Image (cartoon, rainbow, N blue to C red; front, side):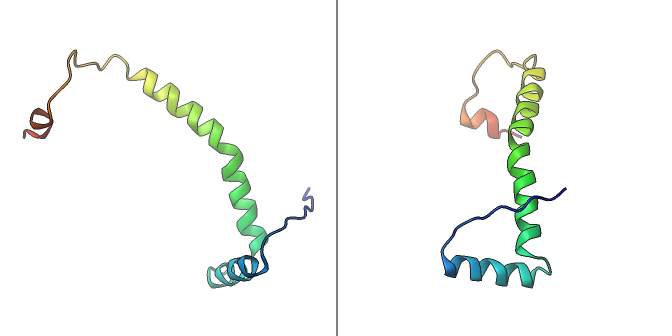
Amino acid sequence: MLKNITLSAEEQLIRMAREKAHRERTTLNETFRRWLKQYVSTDHRLKNYDVLMKSFSYANPGKSFTREEMNER
């Protein structure tokens, strides 16, 4: 079920956002819904990223490399 909310922004900013949405063949409401979904999923993605990085903890070279060593081919 969709629920209405009221947002406040500068008139010019709203006009520019509506024009951009129109050029992208969408609506400001749909654009906001997509943004809202992305906004609330950010924490979940960061948590998944942290888990992924911890799974690579075994890949420790045992030393720091110099810039020249990292660029060797």
